[in-house]
Image 1 (cartoon, rainbow, N blue to C red):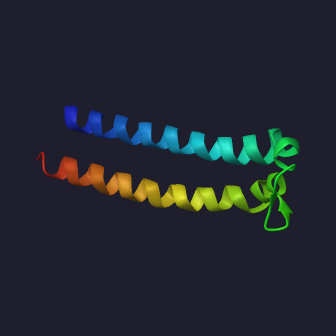
Image 2: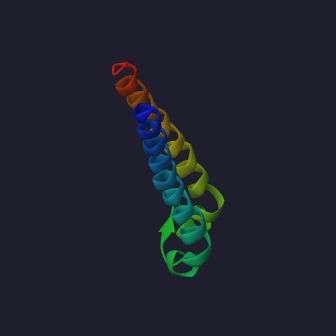
Length: 82
């Protein structure tokens, strides 16, 4: 039972951290800081616009792969404890 609780708490910790990063990038960079970031150009586009339109999607996809890596590592750790 303790292994299940530890596994679930670790999984929730990963989710909270990764979703917080995504929220910061999508809402923070794409909405709240858009005017500040728009002063920077990237590939001919304003950086705030880029984060609002594409950056948050790229970050979300990267976070999915990070989550897969972390969960595979966590699964392997708990599989060996049985």
